[in-house]
Image (cartoon, rainbow, N blue to C red; front, side, top):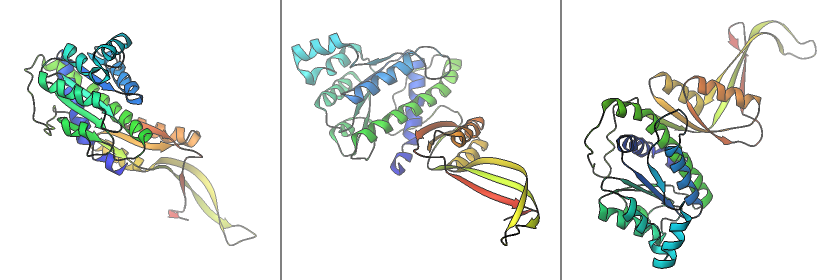
Length: 301
């Protein structure tokens, strides 16, 4: 997860570019095998449909979704050509091809990238650990350094949701500005449309509770103060506190954290979202961690 934090500028750049390109009539082609194929279809559905708020439909094609084309091309030309031939059919210069692979070594995706480059498309990759052939062949790559394929796929899905969040925030500015000339940027150029900066926060979150009251006596059977409770206040702690402070300073904040399915977790999620934070909760076994402070007569007990 620590290495995943460094991907925020890339995700920000991809979301802004897709807002400009798709918002002006361009197209995204996306491909993957197995579990990555379902993730590719998930992304296409978010763009052609919508992820959250109402907006115009955007052109995105998952190259694994057309079973007739996939089986016909595989039968006639071999499985290595299953995506490349579709890229040649649907892709245009300056369109975007995004390929996803947990290994980064799928020959049919390498062939698709080669076909896209011949057309003049921009090529992006989401893979597992680098170095790998697919990441090396693309203009830009997001590589998740985990040996576990399921973790790589989960991180890819989170990353795609963050890309869609940025796209949704940038698209209204693109539409308001009107048609613009498409400019192909060099790989690694993360120039963004002027907007609030996106900050991705990843870490553990807990619920901080302050129980405030007054102390006038001790217990009869032990040297312990008795707090007469007057009020209880709750706020996010840990990474949640950092996210809330950043949101208060003008950042668009996305928080990736573990939250349990209990009343404290529901309160924590409500406190975060009410501060304007986009929360991507990961399931947490057990209860939500809490830190309780007892305060009496102006002091922490």
